[in-house]
Image 1: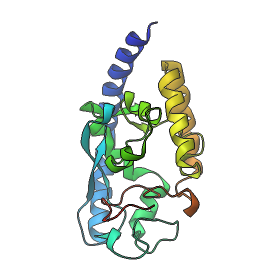
Image 2: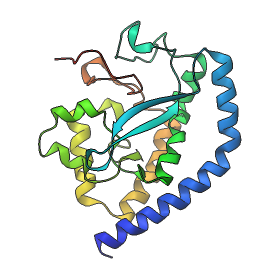
Image 3: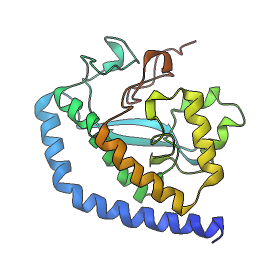
Length: 215
């Protein structure tokens, strides 16, 4: 099967699986929304601009897991496991990666895929080399090769290197392997938070655009 055909099949599977997931998860989404509103002040969803395929910007949505204006208090952009800005509901959502599930809608609309490099923050692209920018050649994914090979425990160069490897070696069989391994990562909860020395801009990347760049 040619790469072009596999990409077409990948897109069809994305639509079918994500659409089915949205329907099946609607009761869970409703419950999560109620818990977030009861648990802390602020909106149910967190929205932020990201870089999609070939760097095209889009707004990503996820369930809010932190207090309002989290970037203006505490440790700013760095998010640790015991960060006081994470709400009680947010801790559960992060541990189970439920906060990411609204992105199924982005998969249906073609902004994302089930499997691919995680969507980058626009200002991260400014630091990419020409080689690193190749990770943008495919739709960003809900999960990906770097996610099942260390997740946030990897340094950013390591994550990007694995993303590029995925772009170069994509196949439907590889996607199936990644999805199966994602279940193991999801159950274990490994790699949710990054050590401070692996910090690029945000350890869990649901913080608004910073007012300054780290050197």
